[in-house]
Length: 120
Image (cartoon, rainbow, N blue to C red):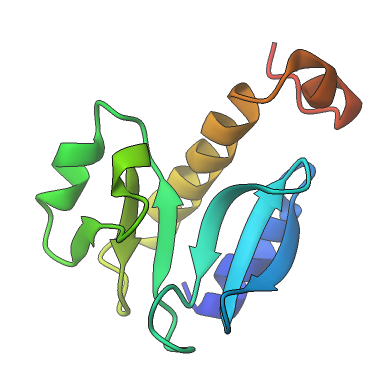
């Protein structure tokens, strides 16, 4: 997937929005400021990508070539990928969807309901 395809996919997820933060980082979030993905992460427009993963899968991901703990966010179980991404398009879409779900699941129920994001 290209960075523009990733951005388009992230924006299709329920309640997602995009902001520019910290210079050129494209941040995808829900509920105003709850990040689930960062594009151009720490690499000034070259397409680096970071997102949240399940805590029990974190170590398995960072053992893979081309995937590392995301600086500043690893303690929250975020991983970082550089281009070319070491995941196929289908796996990357599934991982971004899961990242979105992990963030939504931590929102208060009133926000999940207000954004039509209640997974139940």
